[in-house]
Length: 502
Image (cartoon, rainbow, N blue to C red; front, side, top):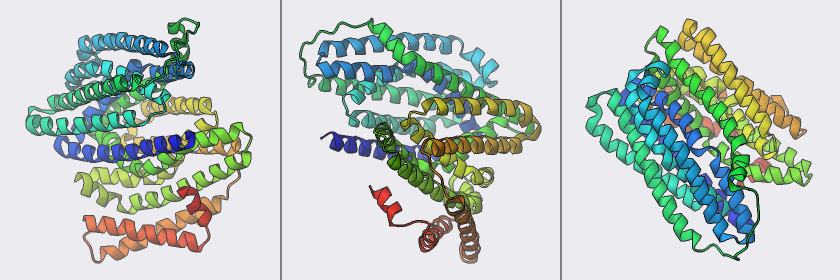
């Protein structure tokens, strides 16, 4: 029963993640077409403050709710569960009210002094009102995780995304002529309403589900509930605050220093809001795979099954590498056409080509980070992330104003190479694994780029290089040939296919 429940929850989370990622990127493409790179840049700028504020709103509270309610469920203390949720929701509300006051009354100052763009003031004032709903959602999601029910949280995210997209589609289409300041504010208004709808949905599901909780009327004498919550939430929150703060600083500095070589906010929007989502999109399945493997790796490590740990680590590194390399080659040879096809912007196409060689390190970093957390290496990944953010900020201050967009590309190369190598090396060390670099990296790189250049040249003789048929044919033919040659050369085999199916 436990295994069946785990598989059901894992499937729900994976499917919802894929749907949300796909819907998100389609929505971002539409939004970019409506408001342009400058509008996307302004939205991303405000969104960096939004994410930092969200860290305050949630404050690690979801984890605290999950752990404390799990303990009460184990002894059947129904009144204890209600008490925990009330206390956690109260804490979230207090923090959210403080955040609303700061954002509403300090919006102009933050927009002018922090973001260096007065147009962000209205958006900052609006986004504060989403924080109470975000905090409550975090509490209810923690409850459902403790109840081993993934469906309510996944459904709430899907509902939230649907409301956001529909609302923004209608409002932006109607009021886009008012200018970027109001258009960005409309998008944030859509986010706020979507959060409210998601919160109402989760609260309704909680009320129905709570009736099914069995009560044994057990009284448990324990430490102060507030002390228990802060003991769990504060360490998690401190790490998130620091990481979010560094990311926000980076997002503020990038458009500021890029403005020396052109419209900084437009360049920022092209990089963060348009090019990077496309580069990361193929990794959705890999991230889902690594997420599903976290409990398996953790259980194997605890039980001392290091052979299983090594086997899984080898397969995940191998599959990630092979998938990332072919997409890197496709982005390199077809990036310009893809940028024009999706965003009608050659600048985005240039960025896709320029950043394509680091796709391998992006994917390895993301997947290995997830697996390392399953092996109790979260402290290492946290400090690696903090160091990476700090180094990026230093490099941005030193080089971005002088070298512009090329300086940022160089920083992206250094940063992703650093974190990708560090996390992969750590995973190899922890799992005591040795890999064949020639078979997993060198040969696939030579194969993928050779195939992509050859097929690109051939298709260019018959098809429009900026059409959807050309892009689809390039991806399909190159992918099939690449897999076929890997199979013939023995780089992939039945064991790899069986691993993915399993």
